Amino acid sequence: MVALVQTARFEGKAAVVTGGSRGIGAAVARRLAGEGAAVAIGYRGNKEAADALVAELASDGGRATAVRADAADPEQTRALIEQAVTEFGRLDVLVSCAGIEHFDALEKITPADFDRVFGVNTRGQLFAAQHAAAHMREGGRIVLTSSVSAARAVFGHTLYASSKAAVESMVLNLSAELGQKGITINAIAPGGTATDMAAEHGASYLHPELVGKMSMSEWAGIQVALKRLAEPSEVAAGYAFLASDDAAYMTGRTLQVDGGMF
Ligand SMILES: NC(=O)c1ccc[n+]([C@@H]2O[C@H](COP(=O)([O-])OP(=O)(O)OC[C@H]3O[C@@H](n4cnc5c(N)ncnc54)[C@H](OP(=O)(O)O)[C@@H]3O)[C@@H](O)[C@H]2O)c1
Image (cartoon, rainbow, N blue to C red; front, side):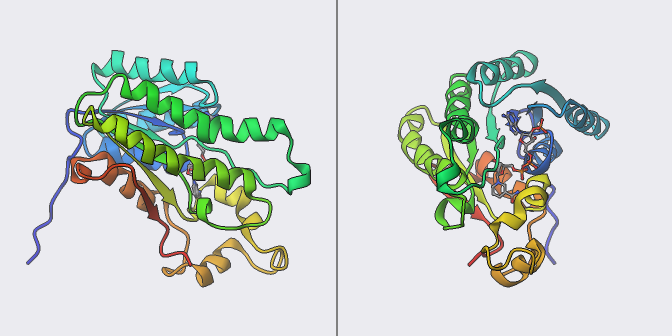
């Protein structure tokens, strides 16, 4: 008989989750809090959802707080992290989930589009790592967010995909520096996951000849080994692994949690 193990890998630890008000980030906050972490949830505009999540975690016996912090502004991210350290007295884990989608053809991309997408998805994640690492001791864990899109060719997806590909190089290079302090840094590359982002942009992933002929779920039924999109909680399990001591000897890597996309 297999014994059931109830894990509490983050008991006594404190975490910051950017983009924690909805989607994958909210599922990560639930997972970390469920395993004992005190969690500071960063959000951009969705105060109601962030406050509701804090209330939910508190009613389940967890400790959480919500802080408005636009990931495009490193000073706001610094304030989010400093507030977590002030409230919880320490910082063990950063999970950076804040991200924005973009689809457009080359001739329509503007410098402002480039700055907006890279400002959140790439620059925002670099400075989140910088500010978090400044407060971490040996054993600190940083998990950033890439995407399976980083290594796929999709019409009109150049800005988003390249903003995420840069993150995979970022964690690889930062692993050398942060390893000197005993801090690990990795990324998760989610596949298609059932969130607001997927609902809003999923159809754009289809080849132009398939648009209108197939839903995102039907597409996943063909292109994904497990034949469906992920639930946010399934992707959150990957983040929790990289944030835990189970991944103590893993750094600089990007872990794909994609249901076997081909
Ligand atoms: N869903 C997928 O299929 C998929 C696949 C691969 C990678 N990803 C990546 O996974 C991450 C989470 O995606 P998701 O699907 O959960 O997205 P989502 O449902 O659109 O939720 C996005 C979250 O990020 C926050 N956010 C967006 N821009 C922000 C900013 N400038 N500053 C601070 N917070 C910001 C949002 O806050 P507000 O609620 O306050 O707006 C929200 O909490 C993103 O990095 C995304 O690129 C998603």
